[in-house]
Image (cartoon, rainbow, N blue to C red; front, side, top):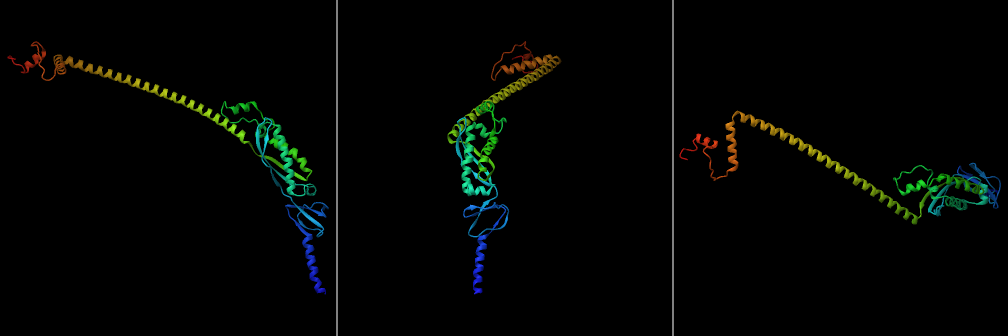
Length: 314
């Protein structure tokens, strides 16, 4: 009889141990409930623990930092510019007992975060102009001189900036989430962009500004090209003028040298020089088969006669 009851006892003890013993690791924290009501303090230290089987329940909650990713929404700014705002946050279960009593689980907690954080973001974005959501300081932006965007930047100044806005969202949401046992670690803007209708007008303006700048660059390029072309033509004329002057100087010197040589040669044999000149004149003025009448008193006739070219009969 005893041998038959021992296995049953062992089975019961195994069932009790299976349902009564539980372990908590470093990333978990536990709240014990009895008949749906929490009892005692939350278990936050890792180890092996015991609860009353079938009567008490161990409710596990994450101890590490969790993420919240908000749904992108269309929000108007104070200056009536519609933008898409996408936010994210990091949070942690600080008081698991209060967390269990208020939201019960992570899914319900995320729903509370949606309500509180989305509301805080919307309130802040609608309370300030667009420039506060996209910039952090009044640091000058690198833009082309005279652009419309530059004129707008001169007219508007950042009062609080994007980082300050996220800090204000944090300050608004933090005390509300503390009520649920949630510790808000951080909240940030993940992305801010124009809605499609505004994007089209912004892109059209950007295209127009770029075309205007391109036209300005083209005009400046044409001016520089004309300036270079004018300088080239001026330099070319100066070079040609200088070359012509030097050529004329060389020609003048050459003519003077030739005249000097001719003069020296003429002084040495004036009669021969006159004769050579006469031959050149005849060669340049008389063509083939041309009859020439030469005076008997001319030097050429006397030269031909002395050479025996003409006889007394001729």
